[in-house]
Length: 94
Image 1: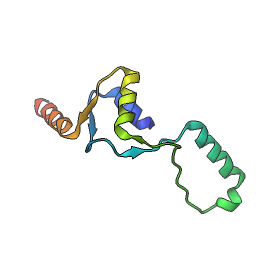
Image 2 (image 1 turned 90 degrees about the horizontal axis):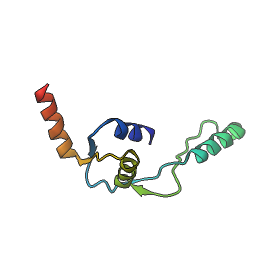
Image 3 (image 1 turned 180 degrees about the vertical axis):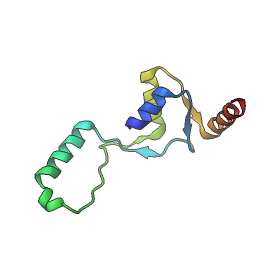
Image 4 (image 1 turned 90 degrees about the vertical axis):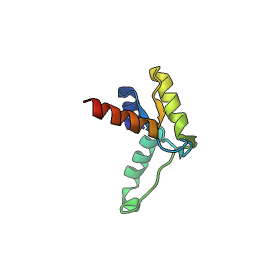
């Protein structure tokens, strides 16, 4: 999420592949802290295992982008094809 937010903050264009309805399940910071703490407390029993950590609720990718752009008061949501055309025009004008 950090990289997504940072990218949206810095750029005017944001490529979205498909319709943007694929789901994300972001993890809350406090939940991540709790997992690290629990892992540290139980390191002898969990060592060598792999775990997937997902957030409590699933949200569409496009909703994440829209909410982030509202915070920064920006309009950066555009389809991938448009992004590629704009990038190509920028390169050609350089």
